[in-house]
Length: 277
Image (cartoon, rainbow, N blue to C red; front, side, top):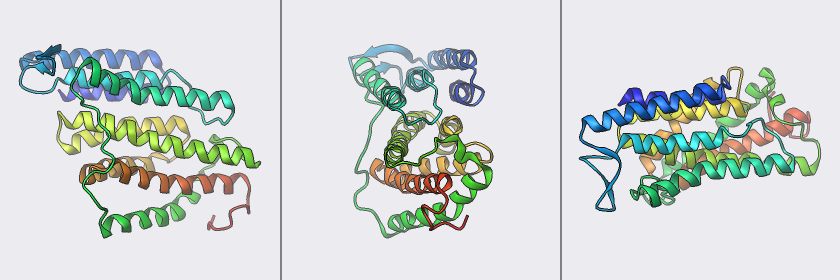
């Protein structure tokens, strides 16, 4: 079972880091094939809906759940992910990233009829003092770490120059929208589906492979994985503890607010005089 999931998740670095679509397709196909064999050895018929509600067998179908992840990856990989702010690029991102969430959700709900993909907005109730404290810590850590990363590594150049009010507003919208999408796809779709089959640590590590690979192509390169790997793992853990999409999105948006300010600062020295670098 683990081999199947690993093959599917390794398609992400094939698509987004190596930029070898053919390798990504092969890994997805191999992963689904291994998952079908694993399902059948456990008496699960992957593609048959029993009684109109659930797959035949004793548990959720790994092949079906991995196929949902594969569908999302295929949709995202259909477009270049270089950060751009023109109208065509923003429409392209909207359609592709929206489709990567909508297609697995629709297939799960109406084709497989198992509602395996969900978006639990409120989760476990009111936020605790510790949760509010973590939000403040995210802002502080972002202020301290992100300028050093973006400026000293030069990765801010992976984003377009933003030197007009129109471009700055587009960057703000784009950074926030992608941040929300990250949680919808990597956490509520990929991580949640993997949790149906694997222990928390395994599922979280697998989703981090996908998460970090996407961020790499988006522009978080150089030593960016030193930051993005812990971030992806923490977001998975936080979601598991809170079961709140609202909370993980808030964490991500606060972090991305600092990313936005750092990018404006890096492209326009002195425009945001709040950073140490």
